[in-house]
Image 1 (cartoon, rainbow, N blue to C red):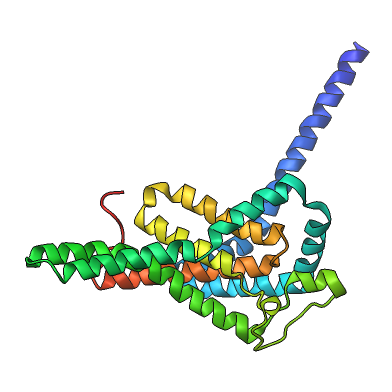
Image 2 (spheres, rainbow, N blue to C red; image 1 turned 90 degrees about the vertical axis):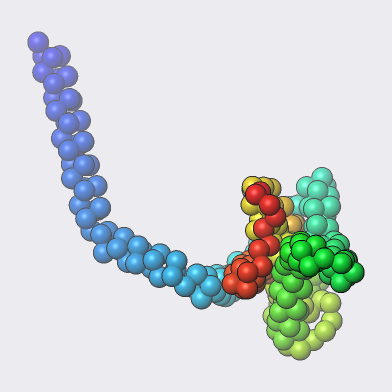
Length: 262
């Protein structure tokens, strides 16, 4: 019977341990109530003013990344990424070239508007101009965010990672137009996210595909060490905000960029 008493003793100990753990978890959960309430309140504030709060979040992240993250990440990627991985991202990064989207969107908008001036009936003219809204929205999303991005690039003049690898130079050279001193924000990330966010508005059914493309392009700029992590994050955020703001402005004017019932 001694072995039975031993078994019962171990079972009792496990039960006591489980009860103690449950009490500790419950106490910890109650102790975090103020923090959880603060998080809920902050989330509600963010939903009410998403642009301003997201700006603060991204600005804080970029400041932290510039201080402690960008350089070690860039050195790590430079040392360990190569071969097929680098080759894949060098191909993907071409999807962030703005002219791939600006030229066809601009031509489509101009063609539809020109055609609307030549038709005889008012109804056909209105239909063509309604169709022109979509390429016009895509064009403006990329162009407006691109102009803002370029203004920031020139104003800050951030050194690209190549200078860090060559001689350890890291920092800013404001109001420089040299290619190597316009790293922040990433233009490819901005163009890709502007185009893909616009396509998410136009063809929302395929949002997962557009988002995947945009994320891969932004990643490619960091993985190939052409930009720092904070450059890609800032360019992506800028494009998303500008595109969503344009979508709202279009709809307030009665211009619907979304196509059909996609």
